[in-house]
Every structure is written in structure tokens, then in C-alpha cells.
Amino acid sequence: MAILSVGLFAPLFIFRHLGPLDFWWWMSANLVLLIGVSAAIDHGYIPSLGLDLRSGLGRKIFLGVASAAGLYAVFWAGNGMVRPIFSFAGTGIAGVYEYKNGASLFRIVPLLALVIGPGEELFWRGFLQRRWQVRFGAVPGLLAAAALYTLVHLGSGNPILILAAAVCGLFWGALYLRTGSILLVAVSHILWDLAVFIFFPYS
Image (tube, rainbow, N blue to C red):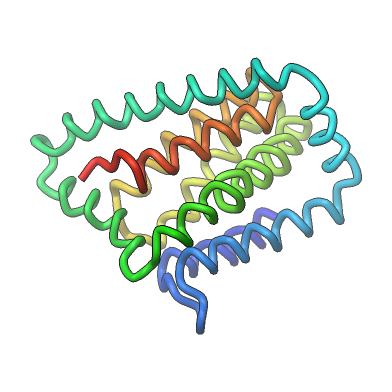
């Protein structure tokens, strides 16, 4: 699955288009495929997600919201720090927002909220990190999943996006390790995505 994820995501960040699919449709299709394969090969995958939904929903949602706000604040502070220090930072940040060019917000918002945000957590943390924590140990599994999450962004050639992926991979990975809740981490990811890309961008 690690090889498949690299094979799917690395070209996405290099080319951004696949025939009629732009970045957003292509990202969504990749995640649907990966989640489907994950469910097919791991019979404990779906039951673990169902168990997560059976308890503490209010607390998990609250902590997801709070963690999204905290991560947004970290990036807000980082945005203010890197721009004066690194000459490429402004260009790199602008490059992240170029992914929205030519795509309607009426399409991006539901894809982020319903497919991409939750889908990334379902695969990277709910499937890959969960299995690697069992195989390699809790912290090594987290670090391995975060490293691969960062690796697939290298094709973008954007140091700011790669750094953001590393920070997010470690943050959401640690959050999942601490709580064991994909629902909580998915709420965090969805809200952070919407804040950063749509409602409160760092441009």
C-alpha cells in the first residue's frame, strides 16, 4: 500500500492533471481507490472505524475543532516568521494557492469536506499508521507514516508545501496516536483545510 500510495500521489503533485481530471478530482479519486483497497485487504479496518463512532462523539468533535484552531495558529505564526527570513517563502505560499486556479469553490469545498479531508485521515492514519504502529511500534509507526506522507509531496517541488506536509503529518499522526480516533483527526483535518484554503488563507 505504501508503494501504491506513492504511485498515485507523486504524479498528482508533479502533473496536477490526469486527462479530464484536475488536481481536486484526481486527489479525490486516489483517496477513494486507496480506501477501497484498504478495506478489502484489512478486515479490521471498517470495524475499527465503526467502533470510533460509537462513543464520545461530542468530545471528539470538540477536540477536533480545538486542534484545528491550534494548528491554524501554528501556521499563522509560521507564515509571519518565514516570509521575512526566506526569500522563496512568499512564492512558495502563493504556489500552494495556485492549486485552486480554475476550480470552482462550489466544487472544492464539498470535496475538501466530504472526500479529501476525511479520506486522507482514513488512509494515512486510519489504515497506514494504525498498521505500522502494530508492526514497528507506536512512535516508529507514526514517524514512518508521517515520512511517507511528506515524501509524496516532494513532486510538487515546493519547499513550503513539503514543509507543511511534514508538520501536518506529524501533528495529525501524534493526535491519532494519542487519541486513537480517526473521527477526531478527520474533523481537525477538514476544518484546517477549509480554513487554510478557503476561508482564512495565509496570502
